[in-house]
Every structure is written in C-alpha cells, then in structure tokens.
Length: 425
Image (tube, rainbow, N blue to C red):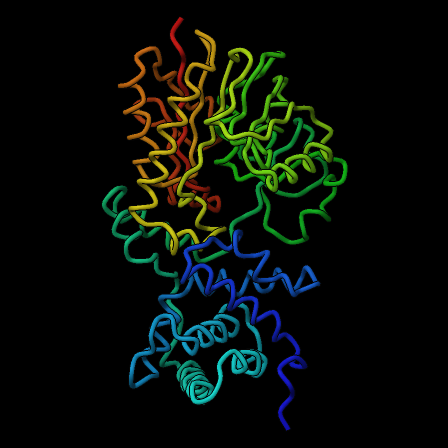
C-alpha cells in the first residue's frame, strides 16, 4: 500500500526545491528571493539548505541533465513540464549529491500525477541503466547557458568562457576577511592581508573565532574595493548599497568613520547582526539613494552598485538563468543614475570607488568610461599591483577586472569590476 504523500520522508524538501525552480525558471526570481515562500513550510534549517542545494545543482547542471532526459524520451518533454522538472530533481540528487536511487525516485514521483508519473519512473530507470552500463555520464564540467556563453565568449574569449564552466563545477572555497592581522587558529591560505581561504567543512558559525567577531565571510574579489581605500585615519566615508556589511566591516576595522546606506530593511537586519557580532561601529541609514541626501560631502565614497550579479555565478547559479541583455541594460541605467546622483557627495580631492560583481562590460568598463565623459571633474586614480591581492594585476587603464580564470589555480574568485576615481581639487 502506497504511503500518503505527507508521510513520505523528505518529500516536503523536494516540493520546496520544485517551488524554488519554478520561481527561477518561470518567474525570473533569484533563489534568495524565492527562498522564504518556497521553503516556508520547512521548520528544519538543514531541510531548507537541502532544498536550496538541490535547486542550485539542477540549475548548475541543467543542460547536461536535460540531454540525458531527452536521450531517454521518444517525444521531447516541454521545458516547463513538471515531469521534466521532477526528473531533473531526481537526477541531480543521484548524480551530484549522491543520493541513493530509491530515495531520489520515491520523492520525485509524488511531484507529478497521473500518466506523467509513469513516464518519470520509466525515464529515470532508463537513464540509470545507461549510467550503470557506461553509455551515459555527466560531462566533466557544467555548460554555461547559451546566451551567457555567447556573451562571455564574445567579451572575454573562449579561455575565459571555458574557465567559467570549470569554476561552476565545484563548490567555491570559503574566503574569510579578518578585522586584524591576527588570523587565529584556522587552517587555510592567506592570499592577501587580513584574509584566509579554506575549503568549506564546518558551518561558518561553528568556526573558531566566529562568535568573537574575528572575521566574516567575503570572497577575495569582494574585498578589493575597500582595500583600495587604505587606512581611514578617522576620515569619513559613505558606504553606499552597504548591506549585508562586508565592506563596512572592512572600512570600520581600517579606521574609517563609516556612514552605511542601504534601501533594504531586510538586508540591513543582517548588516546589524554582523556589526553587533564584530563589535565594529558604523552609522546606519535605511534610505533610497535617489531620495537621500548627506548633510555634507565625505572624504570618500564606496558605491557597490546594484548589478546583474553575473560575477557571483559560482555560488548563485540562478543568476545565469535570470539575467539576459535586457536585465543588464536595466541595471546599467540604474548604475549610471546612481553615479551621477552621488558624484557630488565626495569632497574635492576625495576618492570614489565604484564596484560591481558583474562580468558584463556595460556595467563596468563602459559604465566608467561614460561617467568620465559626463564628469570631467573626475579622473581614474590608477591601481597598482601592490594595492591588490597576490597574483592580481590592474587593467591597462588602472582599474581592476577579475574574471573566471583569475586565480584559477587557487580556486578562482568572483567576477568583479572596480574603479578608483579621484575628484580633482
């Protein structure tokens, strides 16, 4: 006798994974945006993490999973068919997360009803036989979605596009930024001052020094914008689009007087938690930058602008399924408006650092080129190799561009563009 669906162990987690995938593939939401609604019925944090992990791996390996499904069906299933999504979920668990076959299929079948359930079982069985015989297997690296692959190949070349696939295939290393040069007892490799890179093992909250606020999680590339500002010496800086707080904590620990502005109440809750844990100080402002006005200019500005986030695809595979040329153009318009809005907020002689976690030139190189044409009072303050982590070099025009092949031998870094500008006296 079949168990009722609500009694099948692990089914609720797979239903949540299905809701996450529906949100990304049908509605264009990110996984982070979809998580509260999709996993709201799960009370256990580990179940929520598993639902996210299943969905993320389906998105990362979707092209390869679909090729297997199509090889086992006479008539191609529609991309948005529940049967295809249930098969993706089952296959991702077996082939990537190493879930036993019986557990994967027993929690996938209840995701569909009627005739498609028999189809899912038959296709899954056919694929498993193909894998066991050696006729089917996952490729070594996942395939970057078509539009993104074409765009990156055109902008950066085949070597970078291939490096992106390689970087996508394995979990990103864990990068930690420290308040001081005292790096505690944690193992790992330092690729820059106040930095430690390690393989993920324990949850971050269980690492020695977390409760004491010694460090926070921050990709090495994400730490570059604040590094370019040096020691604060009690000078004032506006950290704009500041949440969840990594750059604010860098700046505060380097002696800057930080005024941190972000428009998201939810993200600022996490920001406040981080400041409380690290016992660092910053003035917090929750406001829309297009409405807020500072009382007086600052010595420096760090604008980590809203962007397509294609540079963080290793940890957020959903962005490559949500972002296309239209979304990139929309983000570029917002960035341009923010740069124009905030340019006068830095004192003459002061520094404006602009950063985006994007691999799109429209949001980086082209954005700054256009800004300098509109604002002759600014110039690039060239970055030197000494300003950067080991193994990184500035671009020919003195900016910073990290790509999927940057530090590949060390485990890669996120894709970022950073420009340091000076307002002429």
